[in-house]
Length: 432
RNA sequence: GGAGAGGUGGCCGAGUGGCCGAAGGCAACCGCCUGCUAAGCGGUUGUCCUGGGAGACUGGGACCGUGGGUUCGAAUCCCACCCUCUCCGCCA
Image (cartoon, rainbow, N blue to C red; front, side, top):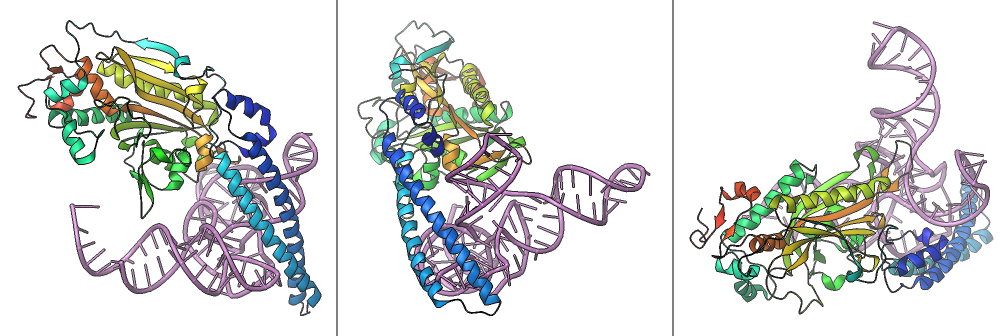
């Protein structure tokens, strides 16, 4: 959420900045509402001030054993009615004003390249050389199905299309990836591991920006009304909702492995084969709460931490700086990590690292006190995948496949697989 | 799911209609005192909104789990809901 007062005081700056993202939200409607809201608020507060004065006077008289004039109390009764009606119109205007501002996206950071869509994104760097294959590399679903690692047909039978099902060594490999990532981030990058709820309420979803605008992307459970998390970012950011943190505790670095659930409404026809786009997928998430002045530097750190996973696995990747038109709703600045997929001959997104600045902190009311006596300020929030586990598994199967259909296990994963070096037709049963 | 108890400031805790943004204690901070430490003494310390001021500040309003209601006036009375704890039942 943007700062209401900031919009009121800098309407043209906000308008221009939001235009860099694309179609401008209805700022004028918002500004008009705010004018009306503040007028009603001022009137209401004046009425209440007078009421408070008169009530105090009555209280004083009673204490002194005198009776207040019945004419006065009658007048106050009328004033009280007026206050109530002002109160309800104020509540109405507040609701409208909140409803609107919650649909406004974050302001892009000044350093973000201006552009219309993904084609205007900027490649920051490429790391690692894509391997030269002496045979046509197979897509991951062929490699995986041949080795008995994944079984998407059976998954569809019980859940419908686009649900994952890992079997035997496939399940084991996925678990190894999760553990490798968590060990790296907690052991070497200083993150605190969290195992959070997977179902959260509407307030939590509003706090990170999924609601109210993107309800169609979420799985919802009724009675009680709860939502399945589309990313661990939601519970990790909400961990400190409505809190005032100590400045000395920042930055707070959190990591969590969770399944993620997305309806992917409107994504029909894209990546329908294989594991790239699923309704359910595993992800290790990185989240940071920082002081405003260090959030840019922390975004670089967080990006490096996500990159390190790809580096150690030996997967070629590139870093993309998203342009203003391609930024996510809550983000002020985003880097995407894209991993090389030989069967497609393309780089595909495997992580998205964003600085949301105070956008989510304002929605979730997460503040910190810079110094013992200072006023509280909103923290900055950052998040990034470290990494999407399913897509990492895809990348491993594709990049490390051999001509005979086997897959070489990256060195760093072997200790999680009892030293297994290769998945072959012979050991595919899952016995180690 | 059943029965009971309870939700007040950073924490503990008093407060049953006006003198309450809220006693008292703890904690933290500042100062004094004391060879050091401890103790002691004095002072300061909530959040949000909205106006004034360049600013230190300052006027007004709101906030005692949440939302309604009664009343001139609600932390206090009434209603609904949420959460926590204890016991019982069920259960991974």
